[in-house]
Amino acid sequence: MSVKAMNSKEVARKVIEKKELFILDVRNEGDFADWKIEGENFDYFNIPYFELLDGVEEIMDKIPADKEVLVVCAKEGSSMMVAEMLSDEGLDVSYLEGGMKTWSEYLEPVKVGNLKDGGELYQFVRLGKGCLSYMVVSNGEAAIIDATRMADVYVNFAKEINAKITHVFDTHLHADHISGGRKIAEATGATYWLPPKDAGEVVFEYAALEGGNDVVIGNSTINIHALYSPGHTIGSTSFVIDEKYLLSGDILFIDSIGRPDLAGLAEDWVGDLRESLYTRYRELSEELIVLPAHFMIIEELNEDGSVAEKLGTLFAQNHGLNIEDENEFRSMVTENLPPQPNAYQEIRETNMGKITPDEEKQREMEIGPNRCAVR
Image (cartoon, rainbow, N blue to C red; front, side):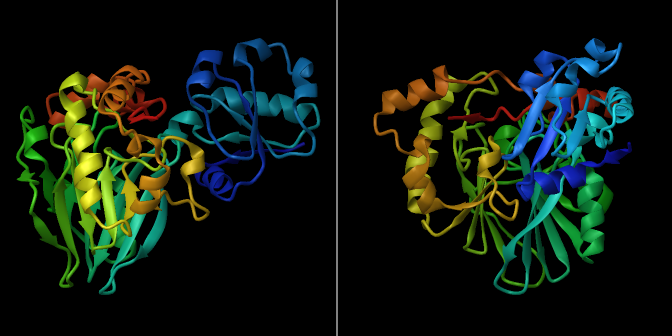
């Protein structure tokens, strides 16, 4: 029978379209339990590769004959060998090209909508990591918000749609993934913006992103407004775009809220987080469409693969926005925290410009799930 490679884009379409897929994951049990490819209609069987060195006969009853089968490992090699063994047993199977390493880096561009004066807003969904980044396009110019380190994806996408990248923003100093903001700015000559309250230790020049900034993209009236919303970090900043979209950074997600502890200051910042969510955001229009910098669970994806919801809906449904007792809120966001992101301190130092790990080291630093949220 045949063995073929399935690339990350193909897997992403199966996730978004809610297709069925059976995944045989041959990584170690701990790695699988911590982080896997998620899909609403995916089924899984995990067995470490080293247990299959003598053959796959003992697991054949675990592999369905009526579903598409994908074998997954960390980097590709082990899954390819197991797929060949299954093929020898008479199954049609695929292996994940590039393994989980490549899945972690894949970005799926989704058009969120049109802007008033002919512009567009795109969301780049990093399904393997839960990161969300954005490109605002108007009259041949583009701005990028919360870019991942895969800078070429944004640069090439802008070229494809004939847009010049003129501004690059980070809503805050990221701690769970390495920002591609500076790299994109250097490659394109764009202005790189960062909240100054997050930039006390950075070793590079940047434009200060402060409340009240208006940044024009193109010749249209599309403006990006910085709305000071501290909490996740002390400089966390939100954007209102075209009076329609609220880019909330890591303050507010669809099904959760931002954690305030990634600089070790949860107790100090929890009050800021509550004020941002319960006071500043309450002053905004409930018709704004919230576009966060991360998602936590696969159920947050909409039918088109985007992650977006009206602010009013989140006020009604997001548990983190509906805790009336301040002490209960404080307890939730300081005592109910998931594990820290992998290598988060090294990631922060990389985003400050203090260290410059090579590409393989950066991959290792980022491996694992998104852990920016509290729910």
